[in-house]
Length: 203
Image (cartoon, rainbow, N blue to C red; front, side, top):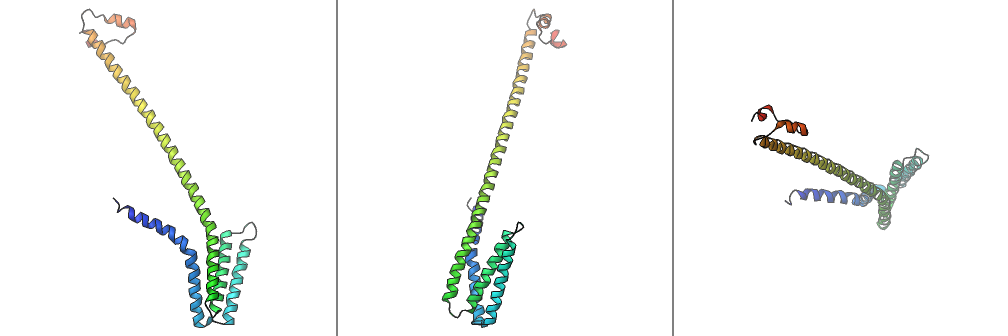
């Protein structure tokens, strides 16, 4: 009984854990690559520092352009600014000869990344809760309609069954009455009751 639920629980934890760890993984990856770059010639390299500065400023300018005007796209702007920050972080971490400054920048970048991500997580959670609430209300409404239709169909069946039982009892009573001596079918017709079949009248 417990085996089928285990894969669902594992997937559920992975879905929760991966987005929460993504900002730290991203900044740690940038730091590791920058230090590898530092060990391969970027330390105190003015040319590499100028290149990373230019790329960072270009990404920041792209983000500013994407966020201006009515046609601005917040997703593109956020991506451009994040890229700008990552390039600046990588440039400093690659240029510096000691590790404390890159680690300080890594901590600041990670905190900033989680700050930005928290806003999107809140929005996503709010939308997910709203969607689940709508689904629950829709399911409840459908269940109510199904219950009403079931009650209505059951009532119709009971009415039909009661009518059939009454007709059968009436026919049985008339047949039994016709078998008694002195039965007059004309009296039934006069009273407005249904006439018996021809073969019953001759009984």
